[in-house]
Length: 209
Image (cartoon, rainbow, N blue to C red):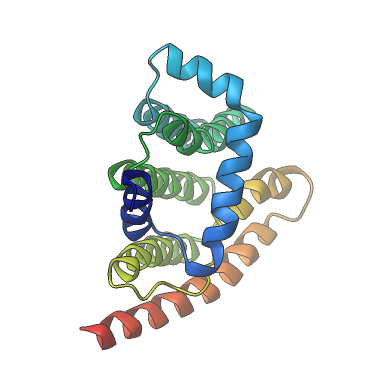
């Protein structure tokens, strides 16, 4: 088995993707790699590392949380920047042959930090119910953690719900185009699915022990 295949298997074992979404994620990463090839080449030539992009992605997300309650448009711009950068670090790592479990874990952890900060901002703004937001962040984080553990145990989730981008996309809609309660309603729907995944994940891991 080649080193590349070995690294790929190690990375898969340490990531948080469900079995059913892995092919889509691989295709999506490959597509972004082709579309952004020249850009990724420029970043790599200038010594920009995937971890650097991850850090700036996290900082952008934290800035979004800081600005949202006071200057909504600036908060949304930073949130968009976070999402864009979050989609670059993975392809950059693969372009430079630096894809690893550490990088995947760092990216996942930074995403959870931003998610917590954004939910905190929405609660402060009274755009989201505090209990709804708390359940969302907690269950989302636990599901991601369980996904990593299940991959290590070779019992991956068959499918997963990753609704943070839907929530992020709905934030401006709830600000200006839809009733404010729709964001809370969407959070509630996501919570039902996430809590179900927490329960099934716990039972599967417990049965494997």
